[in-house]
Length: 283
Image 1 (tube, rainbow, N blue to C red):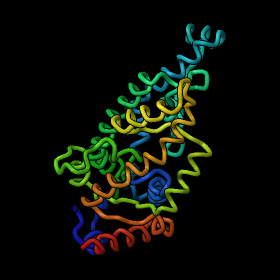
Image 2 (cartoon, rainbow, N blue to C red):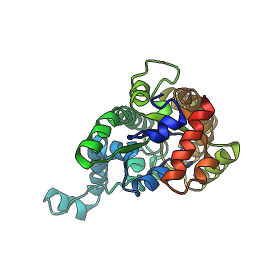
Image 3 (tube, rainbow, N blue to C red):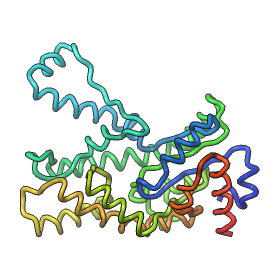
Image 4 (cartoon, one colour):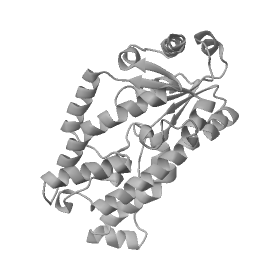
């Protein structure tokens, strides 16, 4: 690890951290809190995916739907209206909407082949966005004068790397430049995330092999047309169970903090102390 002891971490003039774990456990909460101090640069991987790498595809998808409305078609064809994505750190709906859900088109679903194509696009984009982290560390300091850097990774980062490969290029880039911090949730947190997802299911990225197996199993018991929301609800809890050991393996390259510990953080000093304790706890 780039900080060997809690004391070394606290004394470091440049603190560089990558947070990873399930969505909803505090990655963006911590990142936003630190950004608001004015001392930390917040690098959101999902925002980078949705702007730099998927932005054109997202906007084209909006236009594709708009072209089905005669008035909007006329205005688009005459360059009379402008359609763009308004993605933010806190609102990633344009990216989720583009990823979509497989199933019955009458209920907003995508053909499974098109769905997998978009999943592959997201995978390539996420890998590229993760590898951009080193560039943004240098950019944040050189241009804006930020001494500290926090990388707010996507919940699917464990799906685009090989956690057990010591030479995985994305993980190598992360651990060589940043302290990897796993925010670990409890069984109660997992259950709450499942309940929250059940109330408002949203598209997400899955590992291709996992997704194909899930689709095959689900469609064997649920004949077409597949309800898109029903499928992703059914898949979500299985995805969390699939991801947990992958996160745990990644955490061997860094440190682990619990979601309860994160919830108790109120300011940058609390965060610094939490990380210091976790480093020394690992030793």
